[in-house]
Image (cartoon, rainbow, N blue to C red; front, top):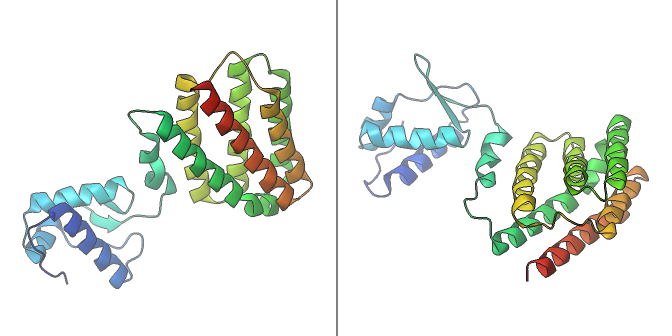
Amino acid sequence: MFNSIEKENLSKRIIGAIKNHILQNGLMPGDRLATEREMAEAFGVSRASVREAVKILEAIGVLEARPKHGISVREFDPQALFKYLSFIPSINKKTIIEMYELRRAVDIGIVEMVIERVTEDQLEAMGQHLEAMREALERPVEFYTHDWAFHFATYEATGNLATQALGRVLSEFFVTAHREWWDWERIDLEHFQNHERIFLALKARNPDGMRQAVWDHFDTGLRQWVKRTQ
């Protein structure tokens, strides 16, 4: 069933062995694995080492361990996969720039999905957030509340659970970043106008125009942020 492993980097090696077992045997969500005792004997390690590896796999959404039910393969949960991205103890300038680049890549990458799958109700909701942003240019907290809701609506429009989960994590990160680093006293008009361009391109089902608007939005935002923090 399992091959014995060396007693070196135990958690990492046990995790790899369990993952290989799942893949090689084509196990599906709900399928049960051996008990901790059985795996410990097969691997030639202690039950405590197996338990530690199982807990790590539980944390990232691969396994589920329940009393009286044993250990089983878990249904894929994108939120569990991405949730630790939002836990960054120290938000510094380098972290902000790297997360900005990641978010830009994600938002550009989902343009085709958003255009193909967005519903009229979702477009209407995005339009409402955009109008609220227009009216809140002198009220930064209100403006950014609708800003984040506008962007999250694009993730929702993909209909893709993994994209939605990642979008939620990215949004949570930037909410924290705004509170710690952004200038809450002023909203640049260009910032609003870039959102407007994104929305109009989406509404016109224009992927090239939307990609360019998204790029310009993040490029402008990053340059303005770097300038403010110099």
